[in-house]
Image 1 (cartoon, rainbow, N blue to C red):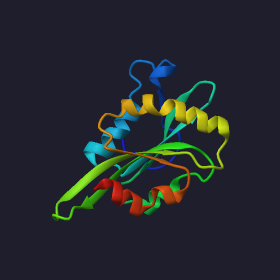
Image 2: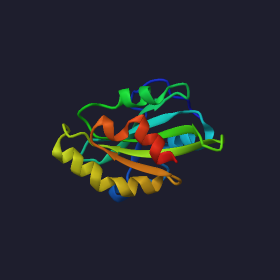
Image 3: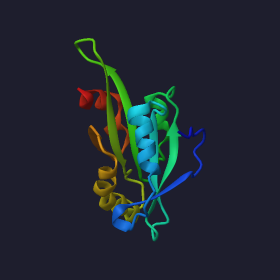
Length: 153
């Protein structure tokens, strides 16, 4: 599998609702890297060219990066979809992991962008089979580490 080291635009994926072309599976490939292969800790997805309705993998986080690195990478005034592999230890001292799907839609983002992300979320999320926890966040406090820990249990 391809390892990604920067946040440049790397892959394209068309949403099913917008006429996804056969073979465009890079977003699901990234999801597999995060959820199964542990090659990546997180990933951001961005809808570009609002008229074309394309989703790209915008950034991939290396396994050594923390949750703080993940949240610091989110843009303050633009919407994104994100996946995060959260590792934790249960009260029974068992090591576990849960895959979070986060719909980031800050209050300061454009209304048109918020509407586009909201209307595309369910169809895109269906492409990522096995999401365990979903969060909708409009500011960082709605997806703080304490919230993540609480939703993981």
